[in-house]
Image (cartoon, rainbow, N blue to C red; front, side, top):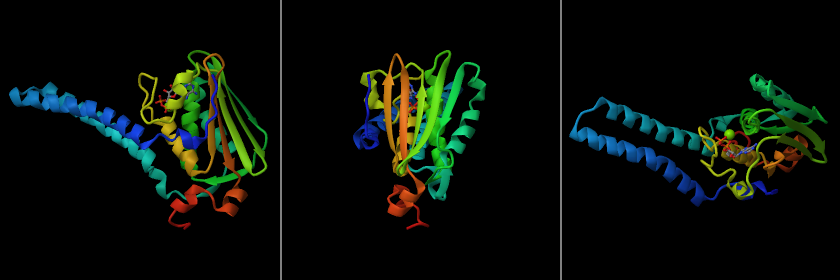
Length: 240
Ligand code: ADP
Ligand code: MG
């Protein structure tokens, strides 16, 4: 199974997002309401604790959502970024997994610059590497590449993990879509919105036998600045 998609198509529709939020918040709040009713009938410290825990869950959901729609890095400066340097550093954050997951890098054109919000991009790339590692149940390989061509810098993150079933591929990027027991389903939503802000395209190909490959194409620094087409430039008050 294989699918190439424009990242714009993968930004979930407002309806899907609303349905996701409604569902994720309705459950904990319904529980809170129920336990408050019980408390009204009979005092029990456990009811208070459960209600507090459920309220925390609801707040977590809102917190995750706000991070995507209005990231902390809103006022971050736009700077030149050598993505290979950032990737090298990010990979090291996963070294406790190297005993089972080998990470190979193939950076063809180090030194090529893009522009953007460094922390935002680092967080997005971190999410992609983390997902790749989490997709590998036992032992496997992650291959990370970079190459520059024409006005673009392309990176790929490819894992030998368990892949994404074809009928689930269209769900990627939808808030709260997760197949993990403790997943948030917010990682890829953040990744897609960040790439969109950087005028990068992101595509995914996946097969349950081979694994998953994300391909991201950024405009090179000169091109992004010359065309002033980087979506971020319009959002940054100091640049407008
Ligand atoms: P989370 O990691 O919390 O589940 P994400 O938004 O990061 O949320 O990912 C959503 C879902 O997409 C995952 O639960 C998983 O099913 C699927 N997914 C993402 N990346 C990969 C990958 N590299 N390999 C296989 N499945 C993936
Ligand atoms: Mg994730």
